[in-house]
Length: 122
View (cartoon, rainbow, N blue to C red):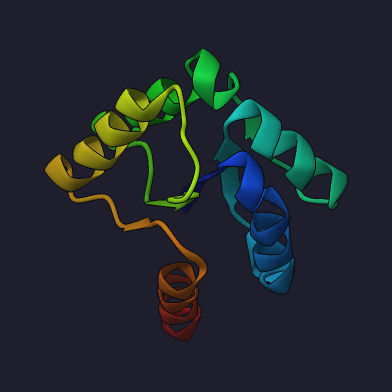
């Protein structure tokens, strides 16, 4: 299992809190992340492969992995109330997930449903 995690700046603390609820499970799988989100996740005690920061190309790197079917899921806590200079990359990542049928959660409620469903199948 390989899960990509991304969070806009205003959602990074919420992402860390979410991941810590599933820490025991997540320690057994591979996490990949954009750079800044990944640094927050590492500080919380989880191992993660970090790519570039989102605005510097990290969103595109994760989209490339989705296009190559190297991801099983993407959790992207977006901040819909803030402007993001790399919004085209965000839209591209979401489109790639849809094109390649990669499950994508863009908020904690959807991410909980996805994680809880995975845990029930184990």
